[in-house]
Image 1 (cartoon, rainbow over the protein chains, first blue to last red):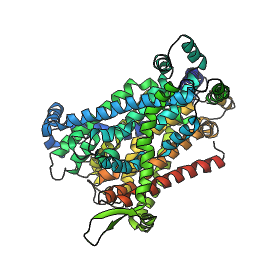
Image 2: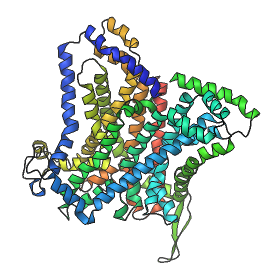
Image 3: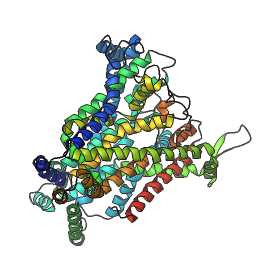
Length: 300
Length: 309
């Protein structure tokens, strides 16, 4: 699907020339820029405030200009944050990367294998399986958190890494997207040719099909990454031991104690700033994929 | 996307002939591909749904007043409790009100930005696209913490506002949360609508342009009808998200005493399960999931009947 979009998008590169041919009035240009400018402030000022606050000495939060720098002690603040409570913040970041990176990578692979099989092989129960998975897309993840907790507590596995990691491997949306994409982008003739060459089905998948499905895989990976990174209810209900918290739950638990331990406020601010960085890096690295890919699910 | 559909159908047509020739082809490979996901899906998706329904049908019974508790089948008695539970329905009304106001504002802004990005009126499109999308990289919990500070009179850089109006008061805190959700998701929805605008071939509105139609006219009569499927999709996702509201109110409980433990339906589920009354909490979960399903399904049907798809 992205393939279709990309070709169309590139045909749009001619647009600037058209635009010059038919001039827009300066008034509407100014109005448009004004609207976008005002909203740029709306979207970026809070993050700017967070950044500026994180650079301040904790004693200066309330006494200095909120949107401009005072004494620049960002490095000191980061140092303090990383050493607070035995370096628990770094642990949370590590946990988040493990839950999210591992979950998104493995989850994408499993979804792709299933979606691929649904698209490329005929077997009994294929349509039934696909419809059940499609139903799963409509089940909100938060509705599953409580029953998952009850099931894991039956097995005495709550408050473990696996109780959050394993459920986040399942991406019904990923199966849906990879199935559609595989049907459109992996030709049957190519698979037949690989068979004639003596390549096994599994080997063909990993050497040929995965490459053809790559844009869809990146999209599924991003969706999974964001979903797990943002997931709050499942860890909140599952985990008690702060050494296995993801960073969101850790920051949340600090924030609930700010009234008793005021120094935590500074750590929450600096920690919040640092926790945004991994996702921004991922988005920037994979920019050319999500720009076209994010809309893929919306096109019928 | 018709190309996709056609090729799937063609593939399906070809396939109906094949199995008779080789009924057991690639059995092992298929199992290898499908089983890992299938098993995990069964364990962590299908089983929890079934288990929640089953748990919601049980009640706790004690032998005497202090005797050991055990679960017995109670039919729909948890559900009669759910329907008699005032705070739960108040919380449902609250998120519905939230949705009716916040979803149109958020999607209206997203549509406006997408149309502006797609028009020849703007310069620096790449910058705007990225700047508006950045908040989506902020996890809901972190966004709520950040805005919580921004709303607090002591820390806020907007003292002119927060000094006069208490945004965390009982009257306004719901809309303070609506602002957080809007801030995070406008850019994401904007990108979905924008990428479906990009998929429209230019020729479609070149004719309108040559007839002298302005940008507003083109947007209203040509572009918006063509991206309606994307708008419908983002609306359904937003309805689901609104009913599931949890991270923002849970975080705001540290900033405002106006946010009760039953502020939204999911908070009710959470606080009921920490009582712990798992059976009632499971019944809440089931009712909430069903309500979500019915609402998004009804919206889809409604828009289909209106012929926008």
